[in-house]
Structure formats: structure tokens, C-alpha cells
Amino acid sequence: YKHLQAKLEEEQRAHWVTEEMAVLTAPETYDLAPEDAWKRLKLRIKKPIEFAILKNLAQWRESQAREKNVPRNRIIKDDAIYESAQSQPVDTSGLGRLRTLHKGFERSASGQAILDCVARAKALERDDLPKVPRPPQSREGTSAAVDLLKVLLKLTAEQYAVASKIIASASHLEEIAIKGEDADVPALKGWRKELFGDKALKLLNGESGLRFENRKIGVVEL
Image (cartoon, rainbow, N blue to C red):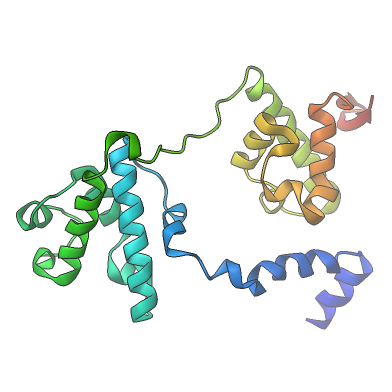
């Protein structure tokens, strides 16, 4: 610990650790509102009715997990939420046919709660159903922009001896390529922005470029 601390301070990276730890010590990291619990799930659904059921089930599971002080998957697993949203069971026999729930679950209080979640969603008028969030549409040239950002990321990672995936993921690069400075990604915040984000925006805005010289790729200001 003392060795790493001294090295971080010597390289002026101690504030990196402070920023990373801030996430772990922030109450909002753990105090997720039940109505927002669906945001932790991958949206393997396509229809508004499926999304409505998924939201209801995620909220119910979060509330149950808090009340009983157990992990979410102890209530029901993510796969059970997805299957319930897609199958939309209306009775115990339909619930019993779901492969992601163990035998007899349909006769439990939790089984009835799932049916209630489905029923509430199916009772909504079509215009009241929530819209399924869609990923931002890629603009023309997005693929080429992402390729440039990948090269810049590799150069930055090598320069600062930091693993590239810690600075930015592939999906974050795509979001930056589409939304620019409006992208809500870690790479455009804090120490990552100092290392990479500002350079990435300059590259996208045509204020800098990549040059191949002396068998190496480098960044050049324009």
C-alpha cells in the first residue's frame, strides 16, 4: 500500500484513486430507488407491454430484496423477469410453464405477485404503455469515427501505461462518436477526460488528427 501510494503521488495520479473511491462511498451507488431498478437490467425486450411488465417486476423484486435483506436473485433471477415479460402469464398454470422458475413457485406468494405485476401492465391503455428505450441511431461516419477513437485510445493507454478498457469501453467510444461532448460516459469525466476525453473531442471536431511518421502513429494539432 505504501509503495503504491508513493508511486501514485509521484506520478500525480493520487486524485485518480480519490475519484474512483468516490463512487464506492456515495450512498446513491447503493440506494437505488425501486422504480428505477429496471435500469440494472439488459433490455431483452421489444414491445412496450413487455417493457411495462419488466419494470413492474424489477420494482417488485427490488422492494422484496430490501424488505427481506437478501440479494435480488434470491427473490427471482433476471432470466425469470425476461421470460415473464415475454410470456405474460395470466394464471398459475401459465406461470408454472416458465422454465426459469422452479417447480411449485407458481403456488407461492411470490408467484401471485408476479401475476399481479403482469396484470397491472396488461391493464394499461395502449397510449399509457412506456416506450422501450432505444440505443442512439448511428450517424453516417460513426464507424470511421470509432476506428479513429480506438487508435487514439491505444496511443493514450500506451503513453500513460494504463489499460485501455479502464479509460473507455467500445460502447463508450461509440456513444462519444454519436453524441460528442453530450455523451454521458466516464471517459468524458474526471481524470479520464484529462487523459483521453478532451483529445477525443478535439479529434472528432477536426481540431487534431493522427499522423503516421517514423513508423509510428502520433497525434498532431491542426
